[in-house]
Image (cartoon, rainbow over the protein chains, first blue to last red):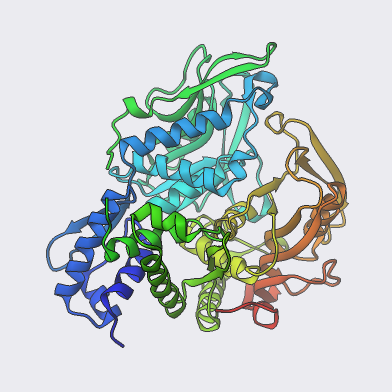
Length: 277
Length: 277
């Protein structure tokens, strides 16, 4: 079966977007469509240009016999500005403020549009880092971790607070929560991380950083390496931050639990080294 | 700025796939690309044909002044057969069997490729039902619930076993677990479901159906309606199933915990009324 260019462009666009960070050879596409490699090469040129113009991402070309193309999802600076400013407006409403200076975000973290936006921004931030897997902690980090994993094409492991039969044997550590100073436990299935893995930690909320710090200790137990930290929200009024290097999309400012007011501003995203489109 | 057809096809494909079940008018596209509606209409025809041929989904046309097109993600029967048979092989290994007849699936539920496949199959099953939101229970159902939500463009609400400060005020119910006959608790944030919502329940594993049944009781508390039930795995050796109508992708058979053997076969997917492509 032969394909016209228009059909190829449609199917290739879909296929590339569904297979990010995966090396796809010209031969693969040429066989998929029964078309000459020269035509495929032209198609990919048009797709790359359009993807870059429309803020979808880019195609990386890997030369040589074992070469091909990789779709890398990325944002341009301007779109990122818009997306983060949208997130700020969504979050900055006084009825989101909860006791302890936390923010009610359950609705946002359940909305696939918001979740994909957050996933795309976080994935773009780490698009050029070598990452083997994403680690997050149950429950609220899971949707954004999976959204980022979708764009980066890596698996997710979920740290739990309790151990359950369906996890098989587990490794557990104790850590001190940064804000409440209480001893807490973290559990991770023994089979979940290979030695030497490069791990990106993703979470929805970071106050003093105790939870993220706990995850870093857990990485040490598995002899894995920290490749980066990305959070949706950081809270400004943390006396002593336990974590240094991280990327945050938004930041809570002037949290006044009594007066029920909060300001939500840009996080450190634009002062981090983001490989924008 | 004017767009060539090839650029339009690429950007439209991406846009449609990122906005499933959303009514998009010809005017919207015509303004987006500075092109005549007749050209947009032709583009959509080519996209629809290619989407259907390649098993991506379909475009539904809504006629009239307020009309437009909707991208509906669907699978064809043959692809579904392959996808489900792949899932069976992935799951059917003896070292997945855990005490109590449970299956270790943590790695699979952390793999975005597997999760998207499951999400696409479940979303396709309910593609023509009216659904306002998806409900699942923490923790393992979350990734597949979000994947299905992505394809159906509806929010996800997550039921928890414990109540946490970041949820705000909650509604909780007690229910009897189907297999262990123990009393358990389920908690859901009060703000999360509007009265009259049509809810699709998604979970990773169903044995006797106690958990799903608990979620149904919770729906009653919120005066919401059950729109469907979809599970990844059902376990055959449930003496008394508490739930009647559901769609399952795979089924555990001949679970022998002592002998450490298990068979994984097709669930009831193909005997359900699935609106295949």
